[in-house]
Structure formats: C-alpha cells, structure tokens
Length: 369
Ligand SMILES: Nc1ncnc2c1ncn2[C@@H]1O[C@H](COP(=O)(O)OP(=O)(O)OP(=O)(O)O)[C@@H](O)[C@H]1O
Ligand SMILES: [Mg+2]
Image 1 (cartoon, rainbow, N blue to C red):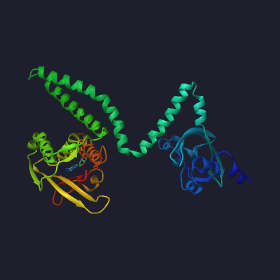
Image 2: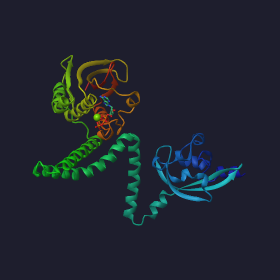
Image 3: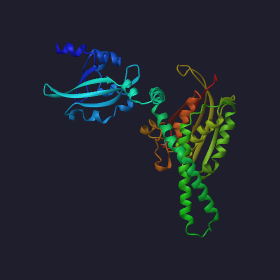
Image 4: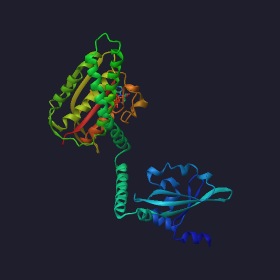
C-alpha cells in the first residue's frame, strides 16, 4: 500500500542512497522531469541538475544530512529546460544504510510571485529566458569558447590601464639619462608590461567572435608579408626560410587579417622551437580527399620547422586553450586562436611531428568556396 501511495502521490518524489544514486522515482517525478524510470535509475542526483549546480556543496555531504534539509536548486528536464525547484532531503535508515527521501517542488512560479512589482516580474522572466539561452549557448559553444569569453571580459578591462602604463614608462625611458641607475628597473617594467599587453592581446584575439570578412587574397603574398613581420626573430634565431610552392595557387577568399594571424602564430611557434638555427619551410599544394566527411578539394599550406618537435603527450593538448610548455613565456592561446579562425573559415588545422625532426603544421582551405 505504501509503495502504491508513493508511486501515485501527486508530488514528485525519489529515493537516493547516500552516494546520490537514484534507486526509486515516482510517476509524478517522471512526468515533471521528462525521463523514464529506466533513465533515472542509471543516473545520479547531480545528473538532474543544471550543469552549473552539479558541484553544489549539498551533494558532497549527503551522508551527513541528519534532519530534513531544503535547498533551492535549478533542475534540468530531459528536453534541456531549466526550472527552479525547492528540493527537500529527508534522511532515513533502511537496511542499515542511510537513504534520502527527496521531494521536488517546482517553485519557479513562487519565485516569480516573490518578485514584488510587475516590472521586476518581467525582468525575472527575462532573466530566466536569458539563462536558458545562456545554457543553450554553453552547450553549443565548447568549454573553450566560454573560457575565452570569460577571460576576454577581464582582459578587456585591463587593456587600457596597461597601455597607459606602457606609454608612461616609454616616456620615462626617453627622458631619463642613460647612466641613471633606475634605467634597468624601468626597462624591466617596460618589458614585463609589454608581455602583459601581449597576453591580453592574445586573450582578446582568442575570444574575438567576429565572423571572417572574406575577400580574394593572394595566399603567397600573405605568407611572404608574414615572414617580413617576423624578420627580427628569424635573424635572431638564425633561421633560414625554404619555399616549396609547387603551384601558383588560385586566390582564395579569406579574411587576410585573421589568416595572417594564423600564419604568424604558427611561424612564431616554429621559430621558438629552433632557438639555435634551423629551417622554416613553407609549402603550398592541392589536396584531393576522397573520403567523407573531408571529401573534396583543398588548398594545403604547410609550415614546418626542424626544431625540437612535440612530445606525444603534449600533442594531444596543443589546441587546448592555455596549454603551453613555455612556462611564463607562452599563454598557450596561439594554436587555439588558429583553430578557431580556421574553423570560422570552414578550414582545418593539423599539427604533427615530422619524420626526422621538427614539426609540421598543415592548414587546409576548402576550394569550393
Ligand atoms: N612548432 C612547434 N614545435 C614544438 N612545439 C610546438 C610547436 N608548435 C606548438 N608547439 C607546442 O604547442 C604548445 C601550444 O602552442 P601555442 O601556440 O598554442 O601556445 P604557446 O606558443 O605556448 O603560447 P603563445 O602562442 O600563446 O605565446 C606550445 O607550448 C608547444 O609545446
Ligand atoms: Mg604559440
């Protein structure tokens, strides 16, 4: 009789063990969440929550709950919709193990009533909609993009003050006599500030979501102009350039600024990998891939170096934002930026170790565009 009562109760209920594993759900909960019982029993309590709620403190102290505890938690239905619920956890012992009877009350409506004026109510509704949209966005865009936007928010704020500091420091350096003992510390301030500016720039590039503005571009010219920009570094590391252009490539439609940024990031990585001389080789060719999903004609641009290569373990992470093996000298955003830009161009980027020594980075641009 009790089982049937619980089963039929018009209040969403479930029972979980002290690890949060769901062991019983009633019909009302199934209707409210949109899951079947079988779905539920495979899940843990946290799986019912909105992603941002999953690490709530309450879930780590379920075994310690001594008396009925109520918490407002955002739950996520199977169709992805989020609602606010007042969840009560009532502990009881069954077969000598701690269990919890959990009652779920949808309080979205109550929350809305609580908001005093009509205007506030509207705002609250909008917030809920916005939050659901954000949730969707979070699902759609990868964790990567989310982190980037977050970081860029901060980066944006510190960009201006940094620029001002750098400007003043440079002014001081121009004014100060060369034999002044303060010149060294001020130069250090300049160098370190310039590094911060660079990190901020990388963060902003990384998060910049502007779609590419494509125009017809002579890709060889773009490669050559990137090399010119890097001349000081190329000379410093005694790097020689080898060109292996097997064809006159047709001009392709890309955003020259963004693609130059890709070239620069990859070339800088290559030059940094060859601190004591080496060869930076550039290649252009056509590739026809027969198998889907990459079937079709592509232009391949290869940038390779004879540097120290990438360890197998690092190779799995090179496109992860903030992954760097360069300590404080790198932000680990270069390749993530490249990958993002290439994806925005419907292209691809691959990086692998070269036979012998060094690394090769291949960029593919679809020809049909
Ligand atoms: N040509 C290369 N040779 C050897 N290792 C490379 C090469 N290109 C990339 N890597 C490895 O991939 C990592 C990530 O590269 P990425 O360009 O994203 O960041 P970074 O160069 O460390 O820092 P940033 O570019 O932000 O200054 C590098 O730290 C390095 O370990
Ligand atoms: Mg880099």
